[in-house]
Length: 395
Image 1 (cartoon, rainbow, N blue to C red):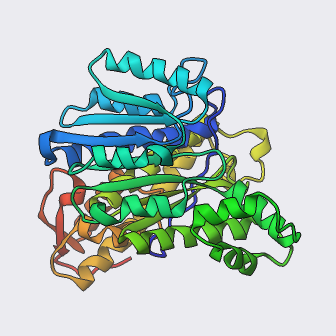
Image 2 (image 1 turned 180 degrees about the horizontal axis):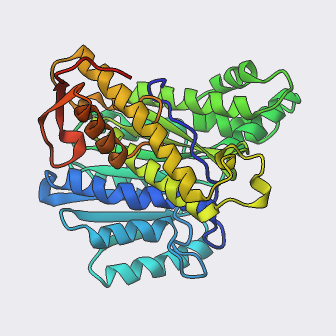
């Protein structure tokens, strides 16, 4: 696995009028990551305070009553037991903001610390960051189209918040559709097309144009262009701010082009580990919500011809075997290793598929065959310390 890269995970983009299966993956990540994040960083934060921001919150809730990203963050704030979450939700459109404010008011009545702002997120960013001074900050940026200007985001992640503590993390929707559209305009010589300067701002310069043109396939397809630009964006932002970056390609169907890439940035190996578990479990939810359909006859995910549960089971078995091999490699290099400190090696080749349960099963198997020993058993699998076993490691 290339460091900072991730296996493909499929869903689709955009905040829709109801919670379609393509929204399941993104929302499952929020449910499965925000709460553990708040618990981890809030336990040692001053006053146990944690700031969580949804910069493109929409209405917060779908018309059918299903929670969208805004309400999912508010729910996490309401459930937090080891942290006091301060939620800030921002929405540009006035009509959507008014509905969002109503949802926020419901949770404020329950004692949740929350505020809704109307306008563009970068207009409020300075005040948001000032309010989070000295406490952990998690940013969720999920625009429809062009996102936050690169320099504005980099200034937040750099500067006073460059240190490991207080924790600063961000999850970004980087639109592949928008990148393909801009690349198409570039290839067609439409240099006045509005998408070009917009993507320049998002990327912090025109560098993406060369990257996209170099990645253009021989059949002039734009999918590799969007992939290359997303990875380069992640690498540049991570390098500028001293963070670790991960990209997750997100599709409507497994055989479709990505609609967007989720870009996750953290400075903590714990963040990398917990995010791995979150996206792997979110993947299961998405597969179960989508299910095998007639249109999936040529879809690699469903080529087994089995029900979704069987597909997931087979995926997990392959991931378990790979993680066991990875553990063998770790103990062959070092006499003593805490798993979370070897997070890239543990999940090599299966990041986005393997979760904590997969790792636990792989470790149990490696211990049973005598190749690995558990020196210290952690309360969480990531905190366990391993070393060589009594017998040489085998595949």
